[in-house]
Length: 385
Ligand code: SF4
Image (cartoon, rainbow, N blue to C red; front, side, top):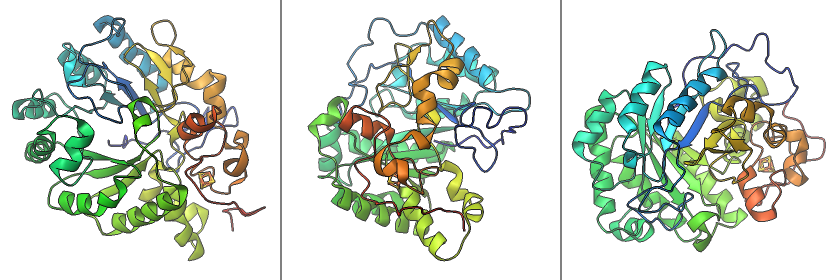
């Protein structure tokens, strides 16, 4: 999904409460997320083995009504003061195409100047016409999931035969429609070895970026196994090398220590912290659960991310802006000095900070160290030279 391109001046607020990373372009995460992930519904025709949403064939009672959904869009406007950019909204699910009022919600977002991306499921609803329609409706990008280089791999995860071929077809139709695509690939102990083959496959198609989602064992994901820290390090190094040669950007989801692996060689080569922060690759530095992103569930519950199921309130009776800015859990997640163990002591914690979702899944404490990262911080080390 794209990041908003506008800069976000911080004069007048910035580091007012002393916490929250400030991006090089001035975006202050203690004021506003870059991205609001909004689960429009958990209805979905697939039954993926790792589904965070534990999606179901039909919508749950209590999903936001159209009026409540439009009120949420109005609320999101409150993140931006005069001259400030708005967060980008990623409409996800379940399958957002299962929301009957999707056309109305997309139109309402566009009217309000809110950039939107969609994360549709690959089902018969995702037709050629629907993909071109998304482009016409102003959708800025879509994401598609591809979890293996062959139908046997991919359909084995997605649990519906034919999804692999339909995904590749959707990827090509989106390219034809001029709709940028992010491909998401699940990385687990059993699927990682297939990554080079997925890369080869994707290299023959047009996409904007490839996001490697390092499994966190929640939702249906508990049936699958995470990589060991050593194996994760090996695949992240592979991803960093691949990012340098690929025609599309390679990024990670819930493996924030990818940033350490990308930055460490530059630091060793003499680049300063400021020089690295000015590079395009640093745009995502600092973003992690609750810091630069926030998640709204189909029922309106607000959590730091879709993978960190700690509700801080509900948009049906509270403002997303104040829940994001002021809830103690959210504030703590934006303050790496409150992190514990290795992540607390780590010189990279402003840029990385680890997966707070994985820390929570493994320990019950979102401020603990990310167990997927094997890095042992150097005592007293600093990124400043
Ligand atoms: S120890 Fe924590 S903060 Fe440091 S690189 Fe690893 S995950 Fe990131």
